[in-house]
Length: 272
Image 1 (tube, helix red, strand yellow):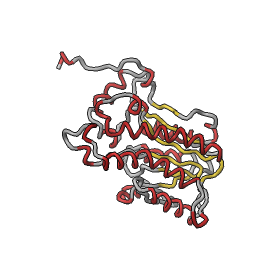
Image 2: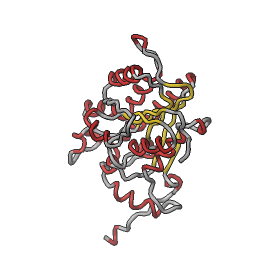
Image 3: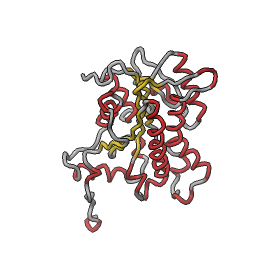
Image 4: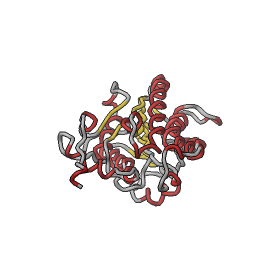
């Protein structure tokens, strides 16, 4: 077991789904000597409890509501918890978008607001709540040298992917938010990073149409011939949260080399 995170306390979101990046990160924080603090949507606290160990706490937070982050900061302060890192690992779209026949043009203003709030604006709210002094004497909850990491998908944010329309704009906004958070929070000795993961077999990914075809094609394209696992990403997050990663760039990619490939293998439709 390495001790990358010895003595460090890390707030981890997106916990509660087996095989998810948030859940894998909780395990990685433990394995690298750190102390995880779990946050998840209030509706899945019972599921998150399955991944909590003795002495660890769960602080529910609805990422679509800005005031919930103020409440989260107050809970951290009441418990005397200072953080050395925090992970934003949330990806979801309104259930109405999943209906058959929906497309980009059909998005309503309400669906836009919910999607952008949950997947992008929440990283700004989270960072602001943890760093900026608030009313009633609530101060920053981040130690000097703390690190914030958000999960992105650069291909989906920058290029047209037919079946990713409901999330693409949110990831693009998230990337912009992270860029400017890095500039502002760096003055307070807090680093910000984006982690771009390859296709991973998670519940969230399975919600993307035709994800299975892409997932099956990856081993035929990347040098090592394997898919990226949540554990691969979680261990890289642990490294980013450690002092050893100081001086590294804003964006990190963990995809076994998929982003370096010029052409992805596809099935010849004439053989179907």
